[in-house]
Length: 261
Ligand code: G3P
Ligand code: MG
Image (cartoon, rainbow, N blue to C red; front, side, top):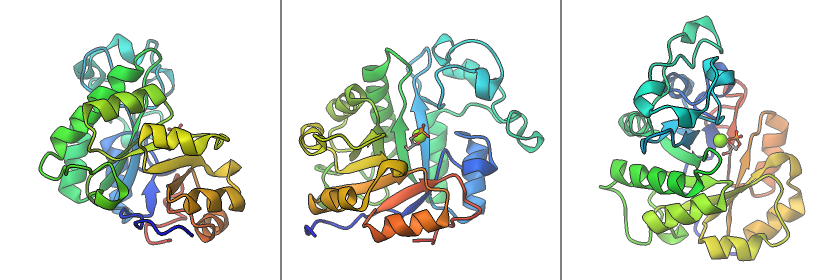
């Protein structure tokens, strides 16, 4: 296997904050993860009508806020009035849509490392990549280091950005070159190596469903960090770790704990 710096971050992350135990992409979800011992989290950051990134997975509000309209119809301050907890369970009723700034402040206070997924609403790819990167850079300005987007100089506490959107990744890189980035894919494409080089990404984030032992070995042999989503069965988690997968996120924070790896 190629010698390259070891993954410097926690290896098990709570997906969307608190997995299935809490409403996704809320501060309550991250607190739930923390209560289960997690010190690493993945969440989705989107740009609403103004330039203030918030946490949200879907571009529309129906599923989590129970109302019509798109995220881009509202400003962050308006979204903060919406209840995105009630859909999950009565205990979380009243959970608001948090800003990325609030979320990163909570993570810093609690010592939680973040994989910030840049999740652009359609047509907002570059703007979202840029604004998310700038917000992360503001929150971690005291820890940012020149060349921090390279494996050998990545800072363990600084978030890792990732996105399915190449346009968003390029905009994030142009805005804050020193933040580390991962390219998110469902299936690993044949040209993964030159694409990662072009994007200057340190990591490949892929759907665990389609990963094979040989593909994992090829990625690791190339010196790329390998991350999987979303791993909910302990047996599969053990298999992936055995293939050399560096880290994964899980919805089942009740079954797969922070020290599983
Ligand atoms: O970042 C990994 C994973 O969250 C990607 O899928 O749809 O849950 O954001 P999704
Ligand atoms: Mg995500």
